[in-house]
Amino acid sequence: MTPAAAQTENLTRMQAEDFEGIAERIDRALKNVEELADENARMHALGLKTAIEDFHKFALTKIVQKLKSDERGKELLFELVDEPSVYALLQLHGIVKPNVGARIVQVLDAVRPYMQSHGGDVEFVRFEDSVVYVRLAGACSGCSQSAVTLREGVEEALLHNIPEVKAVEVLPNEPTPALIRIESLAASKTKGWIETLAVEEVPAGKMKCFQSETANILLVNIDNRLNAYRNECPHQGLPLDGGMLEAEEGLLTCPWHGFKFDATSGECLTAPAAQLESFPLRIENGRIFVRPA
Ligand code: FES
Figure 1 (cartoon, rainbow, N blue to C red):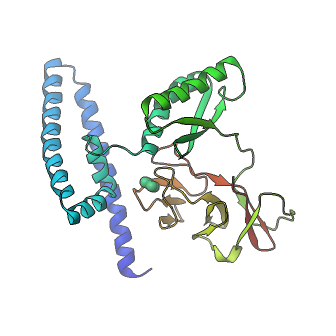
Figure 2 (figure 1 turned 60 degrees about the vertical axis):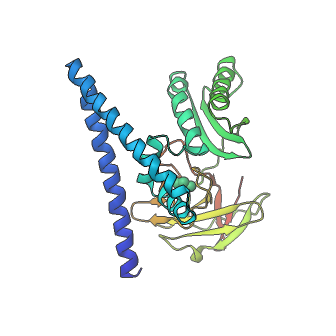
Figure 3 (figure 1 turned 90 degrees about the vertical axis):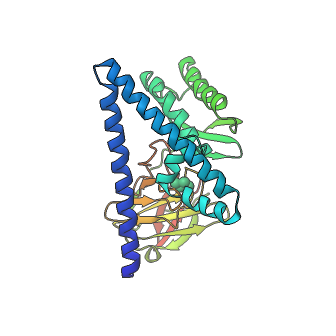
């Protein structure tokens, strides 16, 4: 990496930390205000917060309207919205609507405590052609009356709250672990497996994408452990291969809006329900084979 690129990377990381630090500070301050024993003081403090927010919303709306009215301004606005802190600010004031993926995650997060209290859980897989694909766990899987009720609850919450959602599909749970240590596996080819790259083409600490006829696959090597994911961020379905891979931390950051993922498991650290879709992977004669869903 060139010194300039390293500097840019450091700057990006510092900005992300600053943003998270400020967000935490706001959460703490708000919690302190909400816990004020003196009701009068609490009402005044919350009133001040609302007044400041209204003022910011008023001015921000003017800025966005002005930018939108000009072609170059529009371009700048789109660039700005890609910055997570700007996106969060505009979203907070209702100036940009969260995208469908983020709203699906929010709805599932809202129903999750109820499902967990009944021994179940739900995982968002992807949104495609107006259909939300989910996986269900625990008491939600199976065909008991309570499982059916929980499934219907998820479906109703999504259909009711997100107009873009026309149907909900439950995917079967995948029993095959995605993570396989690099070693010689003498398994014969079976239906559905496709040959991708040579092992040495994806060295430790790197990721590469491979476009097959049926899927765009992202191969990630952390500490000589390979994983295969669908090359699609669950946030807005955009490709992840231009993102930043921090091998030591095992972190993959989406290049579009900065969602962070555990590169070894696909778990999303920004919105825990928005996991990467992983594919089974095996090595044979130095070649990487993947079985896309
Ligand atoms: S597409 Fe928005 S964070 Fe990845």
